[in-house]
Every structure is written in structure tokens, then in C-alpha cells.
Image (cartoon, rainbow, N blue to C red; front, side):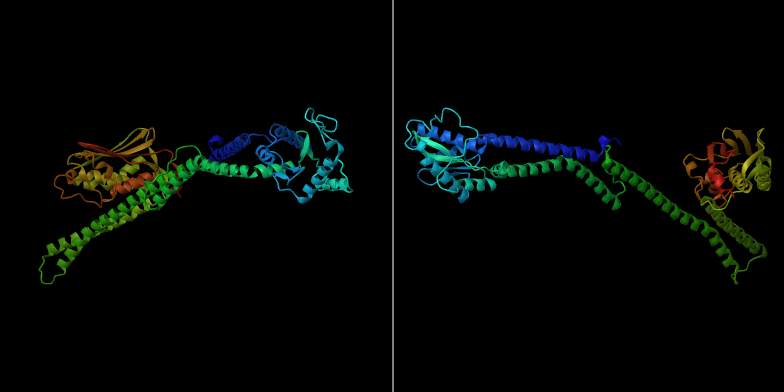
Length: 521
């Protein structure tokens, strides 16, 4: 999986992008708030700020002597400048951004009183102050300390500086050349001022941005992954409830898609296993029904004849009694054969019983099959021919099991071979190994029956039987046993059938495969 397909990387990148977006939005909102305020935060020392405010107030009073100085200062400076207060020659101080500690106001009032008593400030005419024109040139950046009468003033100033307020120099306000007040800007840490001034607004902006950003992250980053995980959960619940067709959407290349594909693979496997279990259950039920039917037929005949023989009031001739006993014996033999074949087939299909792999002469193998069926073939007027191609001498396999397979195929061919025909046992070399085949000249097998020939107790229609036969004999397990034997040898049985010719054949490889070797002792 490539890194950019990973859900974790996408979430991380999305989170970083969302965080960057939030920071950008917050910065833009901050700039907007500052712009809406109409001013920028003055980056001036308190003394210079006080001088600027004093000059502005003096000009405003010169323009409008009846001006409400408090209202003007609040309108112009209450929002974005450092807090300050104005001491007036008459009336209470004007506090902008206050209130201020009483000690600071009293200290500033003392300095302002000293300023009022200074000779340069009493009875000013025109716009002169201290021999200068205060509105024509800026004040010095570090003016000398103002003095006032009375002891302890400088010590109070030093104590104020030690407490963090520093020197507070009142800056005079003039109206028509007369001293009417002074501006005092107490030094204050910039962070405290910014926090007090903009903290609430920025807090609200940050909270709103956080909420909006969380909603965006939920919808854009976590929403799709959550929806896909819920689809997987829903499919799992359906599968657990028995819906084997439930599948989870597995589009994509990330971890959720990998989990969905793993779930779908598990669902497919469970569906296949469930289908196999259902098929096995049907086969088991069919086998029980077939076994019950096959065993019931000879047992019914045996019971009927034994009951007839045991009736004391029913006279039976010696020939009739002997014939009845012969039928009972034949049915008993048939019953034993069915039970024996069932046990044999069960051992072969379950892998039980080992195969004794050896080199078996093909001529001897065919000779034993011919000898076994010589008398039944002569009685049926059927000839058994053997054809072994040059180069074929031996085949590797279990002697007894290979003979059993050929015996069953020959018996099946003899059952359906017409009188005067021939059954051919043939061995030839092919690219896969040695192929053994049994051919008869019967009426052939219909195409719909061929897939079921090797099922237990399956019989094709009775039209394939020789004329004069009442019904096909046998246990119905012969071909099933042949199929199991051939598969244990690592091969497969094949059937080719048409009018007048039916061929059963299988190939024994020169080197037996691993399954056969594992079954060998």
C-alpha cells in the first residue's frame, strides 16, 4: 500500500490542513477586528502617548472652547489605546479605560498641582509655555522630572516605579493659552493591555472558529471513514444474522478498503463452506435413503421366504423348498456384498487403508480379470479381449486395488454388453503415463446420466440392460469404488459413450503424485 493511500496519513494531512485553515481564519478575523476598530494599537511609550493625547485635546479645545472634553476623549481613545486619565483644574478626573488605583491618581494629582503652581504656567498669555511654543515642536523623548513643592514626592515616584508603574509625568492641556488639565498614562505591561482589550473578542472568535473547524473536520475528514466503517459493520451484522450474500463496499486502497476486502473474502469462504455443508448434508440424507432402500430389498425378500418356509400348514415340495432356500442364500450374499462395498468405499473416500505401491505386470493384471469373468462371459455369449500395446509391461500402483477397479469396470461392461459382442481390456502409453481402459459395445449411456454414473446407488435407465435381463444386478456401488481407487492413485476416471461403444479409462502416472505417496506405507 502506498503511503498516500493510507487512511492514517490522509487523516493526519487533513488535520494539519484544517489547523492551518483555522489559524489563517483567526488571523484574518483579528485583522478585521482591528480594522473595524478604526485605529491601530499605538506603539508609543506612555510619556509620548500622554503628550500626543494632550496636544490633541488642546487643539480640540482651541477649535471648540465649549467642547465636552470627557466625551471627546472617550470617543477618540476609549477603544484602542492604553488606559489613561485626565486631571482637570476643576472637577473630577476623567478616566479612560479605568478605573485606576487611588494611590496613582493622588500621586498624579500632586504632580499636577505642582505644575499649576509653577511660574511658567501661571497667567500664560498666547501660546507660550516655559519659553517655548509647545504645539510647534515635539516634546523631548525623555523630559526631565517635574518637581513639585513638598517633601517625599520624588520618593513616591521611585516607589511607584518599583511597583511597576514607572514615572508618571502629567502632560498639560491648554485652552486659549490657559492650563485646564493634564493627561497621565500609567505604564502598563503590553500583554495585560492587549489581553484586557482584545481577549473577549479573540476568545469568541477562537471558539467560533474551533466549532466551525471541528464541524468541517468531522464532515470532511472523519465522516467518509465513519460511513464506510458503518457499512462494514452493517455487512458483518447481516452475515452474523445468516445473510451469506452480505458484502461490504471495498472501493479504494486504504485500511478500511483492506478490512472490507478481507471481510468479503471471509464471507465468500463462509458461503462456500455453507454450500459444501448443505451439499454434504443432502448427500448424507440421500445416502441414508439409498442404503435403507438397498438393504431393505434383500431383507424383505429374506423375511418373506423365511416366513413362507416356517408356515407348518403350507405344504411345500422339496424342489420348492430348495428353491426358496436358494433365493434366501442369494439375497443374503447380496446383502453382505452391499455392506462390504459400503465399508470399502468409506475407507477409500476417507483416506483410510494404505496403498501398497509396487510395480505390477499389466499382463498378469488383465489375466486375473479375464479369469474372474470367464464363466459369466461365456454364459452371456460375450468375448473378453486383451490388447497391450508394445512398450507397456508394468504399471506402478496397488495390485489388489487396481484389479478391483478393473474387475468392477468389466462386470459393469458385461452387464450391458449384447450377446455376441466383445469387451476389450486395453493398455497403452500416453504422455501422462499408462492408460488402462475397458470398452464394451452396449447401447451407450445417455448424456444426462454420465455426470452421475459414479454416485452411490445411481443406475441409468434399464434400457441399457441386455435383452432378457429383468433388472441390472449389483450393489450400485461398483463405479463409486472405482472412482475412489483411481483418485487414490492420483488420477481420474473418464467416460466416453455413444451408440454401440462405451469406454471407461484412467491413467496411472509413471511417478505417483504426492497424495498417493502420502497414502503409501
